[in-house]
Length: 466
Image 1 (cartoon, rainbow, N blue to C red):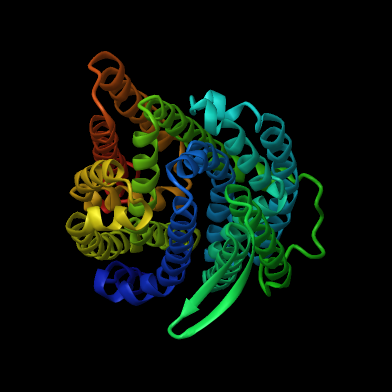
Image 2 (tube, rainbow, N blue to C red):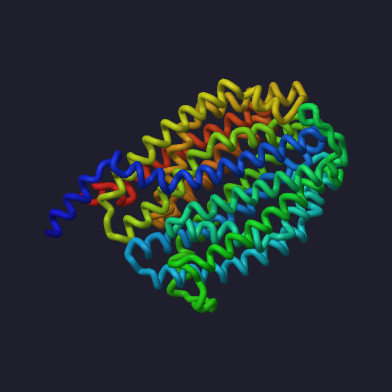
């Protein structure tokens, strides 16, 4: 009987897994798309104030990634633990992990609030931003990070909900947060002005706060998101932490942190690399900074399929391992990667074809449009390859294998992207195109490393049968 069941599990086809993959992935993809849409709108609204405003917001963007990535990495530890616990039908263990995630959120949220607010005055200087935008950039950063505890809650509790198979709630919260963000942007960035819709003219009130208004709108919307995700987390029928102790439980924290800490270190040092990378670009002048900011914003929409599939890959891999059903993983890999490549080929083609037009949405500066369009067409060619590495990393995260990917990211980021960029920009006086070329080389190197490690990690039948 057990042999027949095993054979049935072995015969699961990649095509047969597609509905399950899509059901988990599409809410995350829609959530990512909504976040990207708002980022587009934010950049457009701030960009209408001029290149200086765009540079003031963009010069600290990589520090935002640094903090957000570190918190997200902690969530990965709980995602792996909860998904594996539920795969093994260990609901009590999943609830304990959820309670420990509350403790970690309180600690890490408070810590990053203190650090971000304390350092907000010097971060733009560290990023080598032009002197004339440093004060505005500092104020933007301070306001944005005032509700850091609630931002941490949205990230970690949202990850826990996805680990339990609930990707729709984080999606719906994200949609609402984005609607609020855009609405408040509209009211806070611009002054009171006359608007016309067809033949109807009316006065639209506005605070005229500019970049400061954009920060206030984002802070308010993110605070709302943290509150709503926390409420949904506490009400969840399976992993709600209500009734569980918030005292440190090493039986849960040790395996979670064993997964999370290498991933956290990876994201921290990778994001720190982004900070150094951005500072190199900021040193090239306002045009390069603005073009880099706009190009990053445009490009983020075309990574949506990758990160949506990464969540599905991590959750389903964790479930399979928890259920002691590794025979499912190769078919899962084929299903997700095939779908991923198809979507990223389409998105990369669209990006290549319309790159200058997309940049033109956010900037009217001819130099910014030309430079941003050029680097976007470069990166468009690498989209399918980057998508495969994102999905593979998600599967490794779901399996709890985060230590070796950390080493790969560290070597590729600092050896290829940062080292190459410093050589190109400082030694040979090359520009933004050379810096983005180093970024693409970094992504391709990661693809080779992740795929090689995946096939040697014990997740494939070949390794198991040796």
